[in-house]
Length: 495
Image 1 (cartoon, helix red, strand yellow):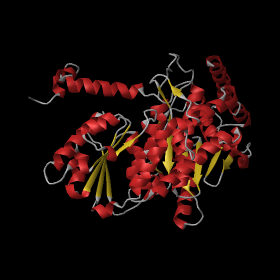
Image 2 (cartoon, one colour):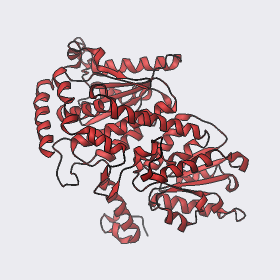
Image 3 (cartoon, rainbow, N blue to C red):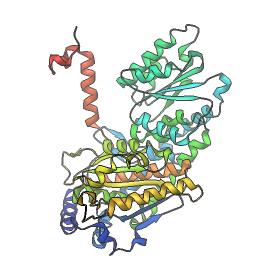
Image 4 (cartoon, helix red, strand yellow):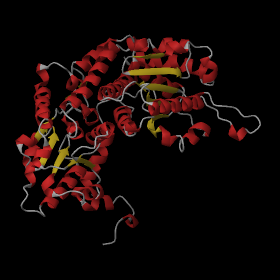
């Protein structure tokens, strides 16, 4: 397979030389723009503003068959993908299956437990606050869901993880021990930041001895023994599989705190959208397959147009945190160069993923995008349901920015006003703001990352770069002199 990847790299390198200096505005005159927009009832994908021609797209669409992508997708859907460097499986697609899989019984028994929990009114128990102690994928996904639903229900939901405890301290000032529950969301139940926050919460409850802290404590983890050892009651434990990576855990009970003000049906809507993405990706031809095209274009832009960063800009306020989610998903998965066979990928791997809420970004960072010397590829994501005047106008603003970013404008009289353009851009148009549409969108990006990794020849499910920082932090915690020996004394507090 490594020889095939080298052949693909060589062919695309030749095609890249032919088009590197071509301008998108000129290429658009040669394209069938209608043929470069695909989609369904949930999402439309327009890639007509990419720096490609027919010859390039024709070859890109051959790559999935060259790397046996259909077989890889089927293995992923069945839970048969293996993460060898961490010696565990990969199960996130099973979490949105509609029918029980006998090999993953825990997923479906836990789904019933989620249902039971969400169907009990916490207001009847006089609970007004939920504090979720979580970090990384255990926090970013649920926090996105909480914002996306824009629910201001009977419970206040706070997400906390800061190691300096300031975030948690601010939340506790708004709460009383009697009307607050704590969710500890940690796959390993060994994460330093979370355990430090948990100990602080425990001491806060200790100020009111009439309240039993453990009646108010819930845990979400793959480590049942650690939850039990800490004192979390069995009935308050939600289990996930060890094969479920944190950045893929949004489909599990990790997202339970985000649905505390809605209901179990809302959770099922999210899963339904992801399931439809499974169906779309596994059954749609390559030329009409959204994540396949997204992945192919990403490989093209990064390795062969040599664009080292990718901006994602959302044009709906509920999606303002989406970039954080996709950034972690993409860079923690594909931000590596050597695979578990100790071979280096011939391609450049994950670009920097950055961006933000487009309406704000176009009054700040877009200046750098428009007239800076660094090229950027972009995804523009917005809602155009045709029903809401504000969403339509926001989507029109999105389209105007795409034109400025890709076509640019020359000003011969005042060259300092000239905009080069030529930044490859794609448009993802959501047709509804419902949870099913969000589930579809998030799963599409998951598949994009997996397909990229399949082309690059790397394992998207391990994270040894992240692990090193954790290991050093643990060593420093156990040996106070360790970090002092590595840095100048001026960096340490006076004793």
